[in-house]
Length: 291
Ligand code: ADP
Ligand code: MG
Image (cartoon, rainbow, N blue to C red; front, side, top):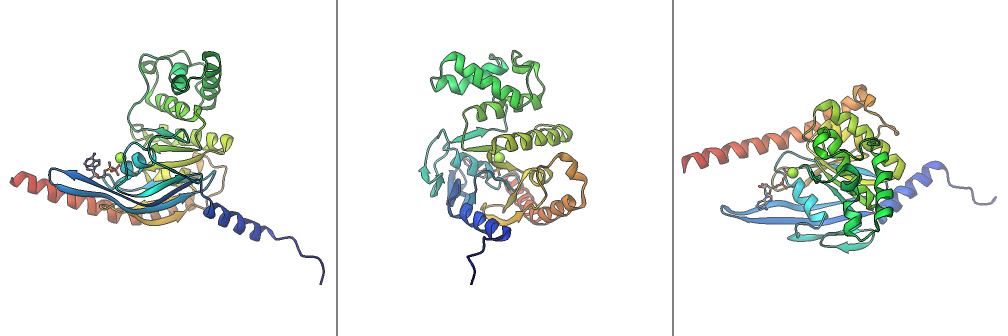
């Protein structure tokens, strides 16, 4: 017998994946959330468990009302969970945490501050001195492609540019994980695809771990390593789809056959849930009308 042979690439890759699964950057365990409403208790999410490895982009996709924002708010510490826990880099978290950067669907830029001042804002709150925070903010202005616009006010920018400001502001804090809740929902399709390219570029530069929440299938397939499809009420993880498209990716990939197959696969699952959601909403509206 000779000396032990070095492991081949496949063995190394398998070990790396097992390692990532064993110590994920984000671990969500058996998350549940019930809301008390005037019409009784609504179970928004139930038994949601998943993990995100370092450097991974994972999307959580589901029809409107399935509990995506509830999961986002719980992970970000803005809403307490009814059940389960969130672990980041081995540490159980409840409440807002510097390890998590959040980008919201709604406009969240401060209209009275310039681009660079918006991005520097959380650093100011954290007590970073002026010179240093402006320097850091400028680094992220450049990263998101807004160089030349740093002295503009949000009202002077397009919606896509304002969302880039929000992304830069979340990243300037150097979070371990970036959480985004439908960040491009208010943008037109072309802007959305091109901003997706920007996110992919940034992710490459920073090896940023990202959890993206969306109802848009194209966006999820374009960006993700993995897509978690949620069911409608109660929100559960129905299925995981691994997106084995090559990286680095650009939006050119949208026209490929492989891309189309993934879109069809995800739509197959989502369609069922979205239809169920629509039927429930219609029933609800009829009952309301009768009252
Ligand atoms: P999504 O982001 O997938 O559209 P949400 O997480 O916003 O879904 O909502 C999931 C469900 O929980 C919905 O039925 C919604 O009405 C309900 N819900 C969300 N937040 C609250 C709240 N603060 N109080 C009562 N019900 C809520
Ligand atoms: Mg939502």
